Length: 167
Image 1 (spheres, one colour):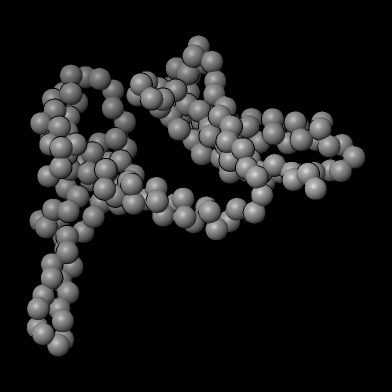
Image 2 (cartoon, helix red, strand yellow):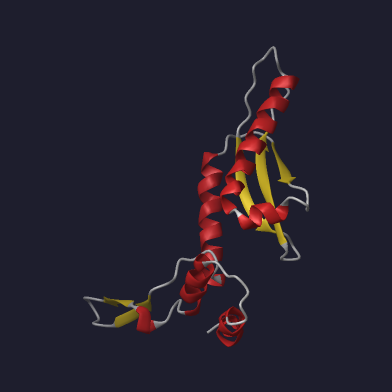
């Protein structure tokens, strides 16, 4: 059990008993993370036909919340995205919302999808205004983050935006 699993094992359910509202998906992911790599929750058995040795590999949780599975997910996602990018200069942009509006998005998470539409509309309008004659449409990838560095609720979207090369 790693240190994060130990902390959650020791304290999460005590926190849940305090009456603080916790979404079902959080319970599911904490449960998965706590039992990640636990042989009692399943494993694969591999055997070598030549030497007869066996190896037992426990199933992983595959949750982005898990420190080991989550980092593997991030690496695979990054590599997958890198193959889809065109060879050009890219710019990293962050779009956020005012602190006063954040509780609305926390209460109704379906509103988070509106952020993607707002970012898309903003980028397309900006490029249209700059390049009316050329009708240039940029490529971009958007990723939602719901927490900032201080781990406070702060929904924002990171955008990797292609730039037009000047020849």
